[in-house]
Length: 371
Image (cartoon, rainbow, N blue to C red; front, top):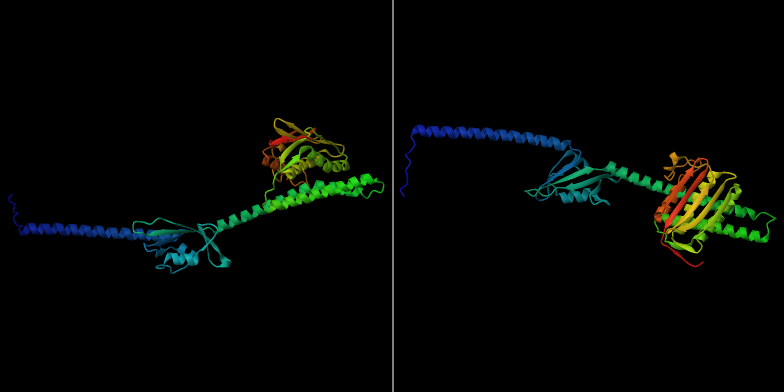
């Protein structure tokens, strides 16, 4: 194949080619200058953006050295960090906390809470570390947790006082009867036994509440339902008699036993009976009945007191809601909590001016033993 030989360029053609080359070179130079100006403007904007960011930004190179730190990052850490190894800096200035993504920085009297996150390595091996000052949010969380603990402690103390009041009143009445000179020896012995029984009940309540405060889980126990009703009768009867209130109790499930938190259930029923006593006043009537039907045991507390307005029924079981000036607003809330903890609930039927009926219903497991 014969090669084609191009004729040499004459002077005019060379001059034209050189002109085109110069023109293209000038265009490239102009474009490069424009690109430099755009890069400079972008750098200025990026620098301004980094300076304006409330979060700290630390740029790392492929070796883990600090290339750039914005103003917020310097405020959280220190000045003059460029060129230093990030692992050494972070280990020296950021102390670990209970949270794996949060660290403490600063002096003990001026601690700041810093949340840290990192991006994945880029194509050049560099990374970006983001630092967020979450001190205020952390303080709010800590204060909220502290307030919750204080509220729980207050609720616990109020609940304990609410449960202690009635058996304590019964113990005081029995103890007061011991001072009667006309009391027969048999009645005196019975009053002494009941006083000791109520005091032992108070001791158990305090012990169980302390166990609850320490986070211990109270075990369930197997108990006779009619024995529980008799215990509640011994607690409520003297208090009702002192207030001239007729009190009756009935257990229609002899030999029936229930496995659950006996003291909690007794406390819940005491709360219901205490509320009934408050509702009826002198000359009123209250009753406690226990029955077994459809795989459930039902404790029914009935009073002929003032009743409850329909508008208040929905809020009656809310914690700290009360219609009495001396009430804690915890009795019914605690009672419903106990019922639901056993898989049951409390229902209410009330008519203003005619009285109220509370039913604490608990499901099986229940077994019947011979009495």
